Length: 58
Image 1 (spheres, helix red, strand yellow):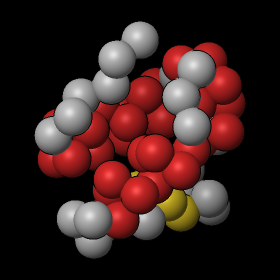
Image 2 (image 1 turned 90 degrees about the vertical axis):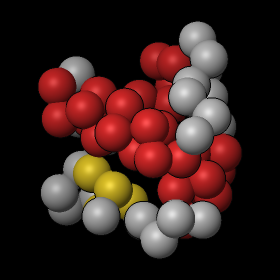
Image 3 (image 1 turned 60 degrees about the vertical axis):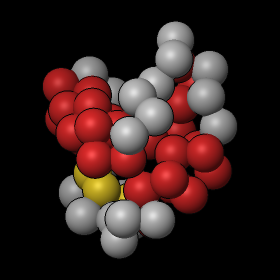
Image 4 (image 1 turned 180 degrees about the vertical axis):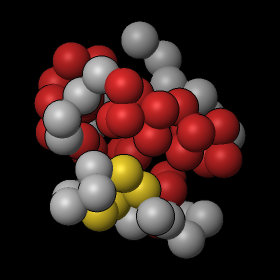
């Protein structure tokens, strides 16, 4: 699956997936065959970081 390239749209997509379907970022990445670093790097660029306790990017 190709993830959205726009970081703001990616943020919305990933947080929705984490809320609705995946208990962790690791499981989301495994299911979608993407690297965690690719997502975290992109979202870090707009000031968001993964919060494991809330299972979302803040």
